[in-house]
Amino acid sequence: MKAKVSINKSAVISQIDERIYSSFIEHLGRAVYGGIYEPGHETADDQGFRQDVLQTIKEMKVPMVRYPGGNFVSGYNWEDGIGDKAKRPRRMELAWSSIETNQVGIDEFQEWCKRADSQVMMAVNLGTRGPADAGNLVEYCNSETDTYYANLRRSNGFEKPFGIKTWCLGNEMDGPWQICHKTAYEYARTACEAAKIMKWVDPSIELVACGSSGSGMPTFGEWEETVLRECYEHVDYISLHSYYGNRNDNTPEFLGCSKNMDEFIQTVIGICDKIKAEKNADKDIHLSFDEWNVWFHSNEADGKIEKWQVAPPLLEDIYTMEDALVVGCLVNTLINHADRVKIACLAQLVNVIAPVMTVTGGGMWLQTIFYPYMYAARYGRGNALKVQTDCETYEAGVYGEVAYVDSSVVYNEKEGELIVFAVNRNMTENCSLELDAQGFELGEILEYKVLNHEDMKAHNCAEEPAKVVPFDKTADDGLVLEPHSYNMIRIKVK
Ligand code: AHR
Image 1: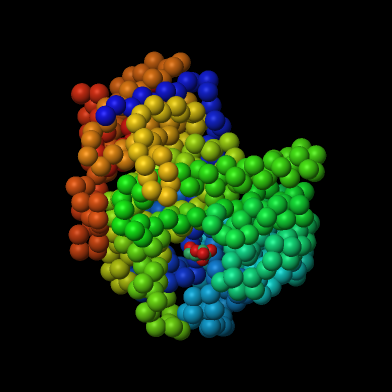
Image 2: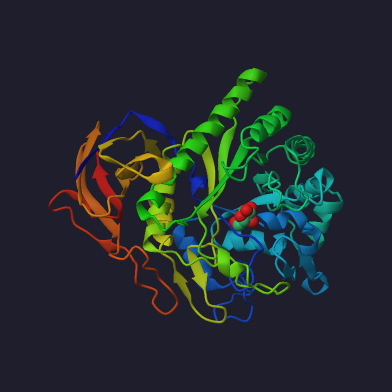
């Protein structure tokens, strides 16, 4: 099989906002306790953070981490997680039927983010709580005034504000599973008033309104329109969430699921622009794809986990080779929409549907999906270029006709590099890739990494952490993408 990938130096989609490589840590399962935080662990630092995990996150170059939920945030009292740890309450956590000890809260998490060279993307509770509490949290985190919540932060040992710039107005409020689920209009009114208060407290923050928790939601479309009609002037982004799974055990079909993400993004852009026109507004609403991943492996096991435990092993999907290919295609889709998708969070980061896994009291290991996400976060910096891919297509079941080769191309002018991310979805044939790079003088190949395994269900685990890992390839015979492979190619250019 052959494919031609055409790009042009002057055909730029947009400069990539590095926040599209963000991730997510929720108070859920072993993400926080036993994940990023384990005071008794041999690598724990002075604050109880696992340094093995911290070091890995740093190397991944995760620019921003959404926190503290997720469904969790809709029942959360942020005040439970500040100040003297000995006085913090143990609570029944209703989103995941667990016990929350509150030993980690925003005081600690903002410090963890600093140590990980990352930023916090903070979500406020618009479920059991509302606009006033959200405003107080912004004051606690960001204000320099001589007022109650800013002084409370000082009395907890933080003279300087945390300076959190990106805030989510609740989480998945369209979902009946959400604590205090709302209709579109109920949410839109609350979000609008919360947004006003939060920006009065700190006008420099940016706000993300909740969109739909999936393109299959019965209110999808109507929800976004209602929310944006009420909130347009006060918000900067609308959220999208999507999880994919190979429930029919049909690999070629599963590999086509990024087409659904692409259509979801296009539809939401259309809605944003429709409301912009209705309002005769100047500004654009951008997209925050703040939860995306593969999530289905753990569904059955989660139903059997005993309730009301501290940090139960929930949502611990073990990712396979085919999941890594899907993550490669999904991240390509985000890059190819860099003009409107300015934030995206791989959900999640540690232990919970995550690229990074820990053994409580033991070591850590990396899942297959770690690699395509890490390569994009590390090297996908610069301008996203428009990609024209000419290749054969196949019928990918519910996703319709899908190209065998999925790609994105980034031009990092500072480093003088073109970075090609390409997935060959063809299960049996090599693909000889021709790169038609107009406006560039192509130089040497700096790095050519491939992730592949003969068994699509192969995965890593604590006992066998290097079963599916990237290997180096040369391009002596040109760029040849192996069947069912993920490829990251860095090329020197002038
Ligand atoms: O990421 C896991 C869960 O998925 C989040 O808590 C929720 O927002 C979504 O349904």
